[in-house]
Length: 224
Ligand SMILES: *Cc1c(COP(=O)(O)O)cnc(C)c1O
Image (cartoon, rainbow, N blue to C red; front, side):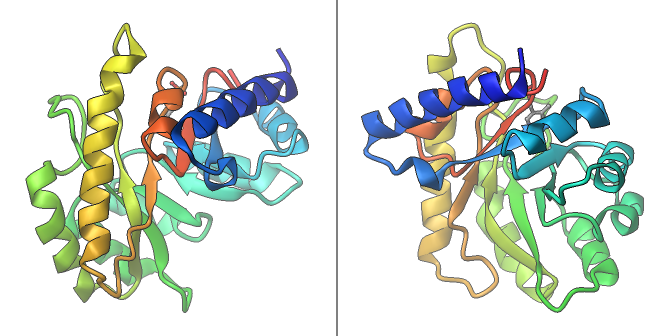
């Protein structure tokens, strides 16, 4: 399948999910996760109109950043080791995996731009041991502590739902992240507007959109 065909199908699903939940489909941005695919396939995604590209390894991110001929908005979506921060930050517009103060500290040290780096705080809503992220009840104290790092702006929360047979079973996870996001937003912290929700992958993005996702991260069903 071409990326264009896949994108068309996904966009229709998003439109329908938005209609069901009373949302505007313009508020849902698609990040094409290119971690499994080549530079050529990534270029095909950009040619099909994709603007946002996500990678979970610094090597893949840098390779794509340097090889495509349309400049995408790059998102780092995987766990980020502190020692890799200096290689990654110059390329990215968003970090989806802020999960510890030592990482914020490293970003503070390496970030060059006058504008802060847009970060999502990753929350492990499901509590699965294999997943990274903060516990829901640690999230607000953590975000409050981030005020000491002016290079970090908390634009939203991110989660990965468990992989389940029936995607409907992911709904409580997404709902819980949305309630937490609204709680943070209500604090009106200068460094944490927290208006965005990064949630939903190939298997569960329709449910995530119904529950308020503003960024969905799609790999296999969009680019392969
Ligand atoms: C790989 C990955 C995705 C995309 O997964 P698909 O199931 O292929 O859509 C989304 N988010 C994160 C954090 C990932 O690592």
